[in-house]
Length: 165
Image (cartoon, rainbow, N blue to C red; front, side, top):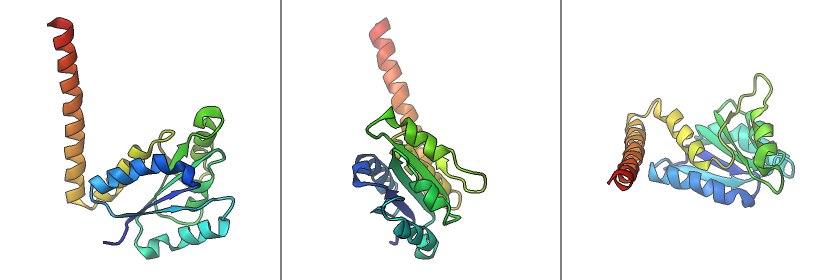
């Protein structure tokens, strides 16, 4: 099956964060591709990637970068597909620099932004966007949400038993 989500990172140093997004998309059976392109070192390749994404069947783009973190914005400037930015922790400022770079987009060029190193939430948000028109995927997301809630309640019950038992 052809990819419908594109995961792109500014550097392969972001791969540990993106692997979490990839694993979740695999678990949900959402086909994706993964690339490493830099907004600053390969700007022409990023522009071409973004401009051609829709014609390749991509429906959502997840873009991760650290430090200046311009990748999501550079992509969003060249496509009207939904772009989800993941700010990644870099060698300084604990990822706050990347968060501010990702979230501070000018009017007219939106980038949905998740938490620093938020690969799981980026994958979930991309799946939720796709699930608007995919009832089977929506059911998988509902089941995952219910399972996550059940885990929390189970842990709470164990804690209460330990404290009160």
